[in-house]
Length: 270
Image (cartoon, rainbow, N blue to C red):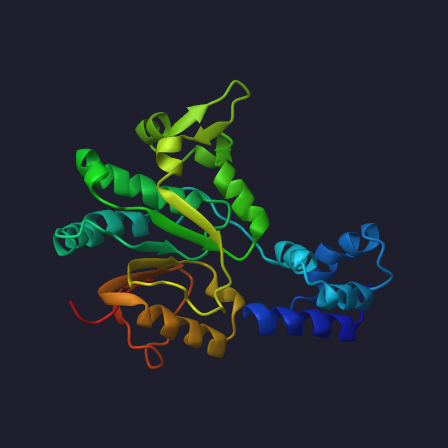
């Protein structure tokens, strides 16, 4: 069983490196790491952390992050966001970016890929025959390399796709003989998956038009959350939109977003 000292050491490491607050999650942390520590031959959690801190390859750190980050997502989650994106945001952007035809959309907690593929499907559906003349690629990032591997593979079962409209299922997925569905290459090439820690400096050369940062800030304390939101605000185009999870909140006294409707915010300007 993990000691309090070991728990505080790992929680402190995750907080400092990734902004993730695991302060009340000792039982969960122990459950997720115990078998890994035993099967890896470490005598204690401290021994594992000692090796991790000396490991210049970053492999052990990756393993720790993959084990401790929760990834729960599904197609059509919080579908109202996609409706708003299609009916309000995209008509505005089509007008605004008419001369460059370059849309910059970032999904900052991509998990196993359902959300960024959903965004890509909405974009394809909206632009239709015009799609080929617009750059609508979605940047999709996550801190966990494990879930990104699944996202890149783009293979889902029938249950995971049950809420998707049939025409989208036919158009964007290929059903294999074992009953699994794989995202077609046409859609896969619309999403760029990258590993990225939200606590790192943002590497974007240009500001984003829309940022989806849904159901990830629940793992951060208020300070970390406000610092992240300020960075997000700075990297949004004036008039750009931010979508957060429907159960999440944003302190507008700290970050100057305009509330459009619950969980949808906008940066001032045109």
